[in-house]
Length: 259
Image (cartoon, rainbow, N blue to C red; front, top):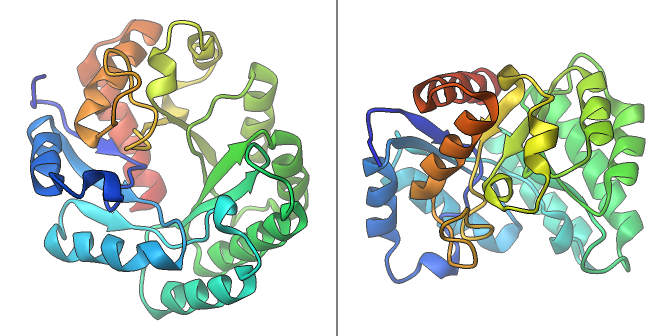
């Protein structure tokens, strides 16, 4: 892949233990592929140290967020949120994320997920930074919350957007949200290309969600930020524009939202 294009991976879990063996090399591959900024969503209290360590080691390339992932909302969720709040308000972060509602794995803490989501939306509005939304099997529940809390201060991204065109139009109606487009776009039967084609390139940002959801031709393997160009190439096919234009527009969109 040529590295003449400068990409931003807006969602990558570089601190994941899946990169324990070769993290430094993997980050170098990403830089070589033209991915010069990598935005790090937090998961829970346990992921904070590794994430901040990457920021220290790569201050011009790695940018952390702060938040409690919905699948980490369990019996100790209030304690976790309290610690995350301390970190969030102690210094500047680029976003509150990743946050949201996930009803795919289990629904035992559904109500607590909603409460944690609302609390973190309020923090983001107070700090005037974007939110990064994780929505899995939960668009109606997410929309129900946003219908109540959306205003001119609320902005962010629906990370790993895989919704229908109807979902996309609802997201657009809020006025402050982008769509995070990742490896699913490259999957032959995802149907996501048909939805994305109806959107504006000015609403899209690129992401890997690595180590998950590797794009074709690496589907099923460990994902990494250096695979961003595969997603950009597919997007260039969808919009019938150059990869250069995809890189330029999506990076500008990400800069506008997060920096």
